[in-house]
Amino acid sequence: MSVELTLLIWSTVLAFAYLGVQLTLYRIDYGVEHANSQRDHERPPNKWTMRGQRALANFLETYGIFIALAVATEMSGRSDGLTQWGAHIWFWARWAYLPAYFIDINQMRSLIWTISFLGLVLMFFGVAF
Image (cartoon, rainbow, N blue to C red; front, side):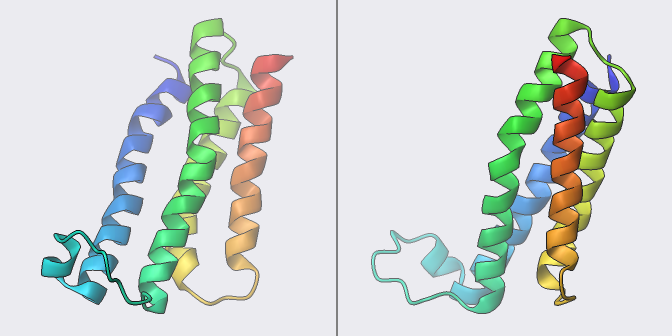
């Protein structure tokens, strides 16, 4: 099994982490009873709940691209240094991004996002050319 496919499998743990943070913060903010309701009349969330929601949405925006590139790499048999480094960079940067979203260090979150994006670019060039 390629490095990219291995990281794709482990990325499900990463996805569960993002989901877990978001759902935990939501339930702390609104309460379990509200979370189990239809949520028809919901007040605005607090800043932590919003950060959890935005972090999850941001993860999901790039997750599909990572999946596509990892599968394309595996199916084409084009796993090489670029695709392997790219997969590692994306994977570990996305782990770093989650706590960075909650820590207010100027430009840290954006820098980590950019690094993760560069990982996807490396994967693309490795599999496409």
